[in-house]
Each structure stands twice: as structure tokens, then as C-alpha cells.
Length: 380
Image (cartoon, rainbow, N blue to C red; front, side, top):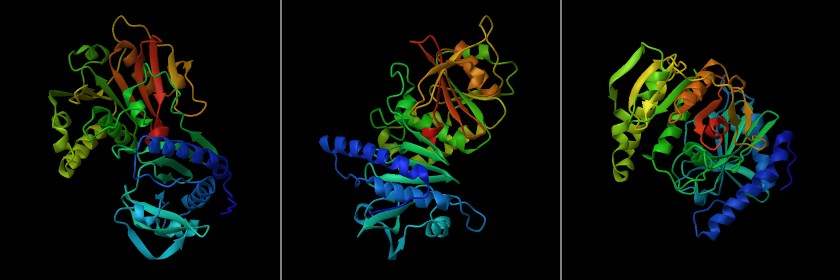
């Protein structure tokens, strides 16, 4: 198939995307995995990105499209919804069909026959390492794939925003101090499950980012109350006894955690906690996911110095760690979170900005300073 895209970024990124998927699929075959998706070749990737990008800039009845496309044949889609007549892959068709397929987990199936790409229907089931292209907002596209074990959030490969292209860099950071949450988002850990603490943290981060108001979540050790030294008194919304809705769910065994009703309850509790981060101030939970306070004002702990430098990085090509002043990362919310972790080295802080940026703050033992990882590229 010969395709001439008018979105230049599609042509630039397509060969890189093919190479990444080829490497993943080859490694999976060597390890004996089955149910693997077909390889998205560069010309296919370029064509899908181009049509989807231009569709993202259009509107249908005043709404911008929010769609997800998956490249696979119908027979690999489980129980697909099939159109009697295949539809051409074009910006116009994608815009028209978008209102019916914008809910999470629904993909438009795209395949190629006789050198022609077409839309064959919809599916909620896709194979391992299936090429997926999501439209998050106008001109913002995310290339991702389904994790090999199917649990947790899809793994992001690249993010395109207008003429900006960000390729995810799996090996960008010092793994000795890398937060487990970041390792999981990069798909560098063992398979996660619904009730794994790391997977729940990712769900909290996605939910925090989605409410769009910005917020701070502090995760403090369960064994001590030293975190109170870094909080201005009185705390407006101090929770006593600690709220254990999410904590109790996570204590249930994995067999129970696989049930749909349990997953629904987990989502409800995650949304509950994440929603509280929209209140001015920080939300504080224990390492066992018990809610301790929200709307808390962070202050420098007595006897501690003002933080004047952090290590900042982003898991993309060219996003290697650099030492900067905390104010270079964000505003007051980011500065207070960095100060909190500087004073409470066994704590972690998650910060969502109103502009969509999301940052993890943790203490790096090897660097003897706070490290900040910007991960919004992985959360889209």
C-alpha cells in the first residue's frame, strides 16, 4: 500500500513505531506467547495516524471525536460487532461514527485487504501487543498496546500533539530508585493485578488527572505519624478514624478481586479518593490506602532546610534527568510536594496540574535528593 500522508508527524514516527512493535512481538514469540496481534507496518501506521489526526480536528454536532482504533482482523477480536459493509478509513467517516464509540474500552477495528485499509466494526477484545491509537483531544493522539497479560492500563508507545512527537523511553532512568508505579507504566515489571498496590496507584493517578482541577496526593508510611510535622495545623479535613473503604477492598484475595462486582467497587473507591484531591490542599493516605486527611496545607517541617534542587526527568526520548530548582517543574503545588518529600523521605507525592501534567515525587537514596518524574505521557 502506498499512502501519502499530509500530517508530517505521521510519516516521521511510523518506521519507529513499526520497529518497536516488531521487537515486542519477536520477544513474545521467543518466550512462547500466543494470541499475538499482527505487526503494524510503517505504511499502515502512517495511514491510520494521518486519518485519525485530521478527524480529531473536526466536530460532530459541536463535539470533538474521542475514539480508539485497533489494528487487527475480525477473527482476532473475540466477539466483534461487524458491519455488513466495510467502511473506508477516512477523517470524515471517523468523525461521523465517533459519538457511538467514544466510551472507554471500545475500539474501532481496522484491517487491510488488497492494499486498502478499512473499518470492519467494533470490539472490546484485542490480542496481545495490538496496535491501538487513541484520540484524547483535538490534535492529541496516543499510540499504545495491550499488555501481554491484559491487566492494568495499556502501555504507551508515543504521544503526538500537533507537531510535537514524544517517544516513550523505557530505559531512561536509574532503576535503583525508580518508583514502582513508573516501572509498571513502562511495562518493566511482573504482571500486575486488579488488587496490586502499584496498579491501584496508577488508577488513582489516572482518576486524579481526569478531574482536571489539579491536586496533590501524599502517600505516607502506615507505621508512624511523622508526616504531621510537615502539615500546617489545624487540618481542615482531618479524618478520624481513618477511612478504610479502599484499604479493606485491597485486603481481599485475588480470586475475589477478579469478580466484576469487586472491580466495580474498587473503581468507586478510587474515584472517591481521587475526587478529594480536587479540594484545595493535599490529600493524605497511608501506605495501606487508608484516608487520613484532605485539604491539608503543606509546610516546611521544623528544623528542615528549604529545598533548592531536585532531579527532574520524563520517560521520553531526550528526557534524561537534570538537576533543577523545584519551581522549574511547576507552581506552588509542585514546590510544596517537593518540600514534603524532602522532609519526609519515606513518603511519596503525586501531583496533578490543571494543564494535564502529572508528576511523581520521591526520595532518591543514590542521589541524596528528591526526584521528580513527569509521567503524563504514560497516563493518557
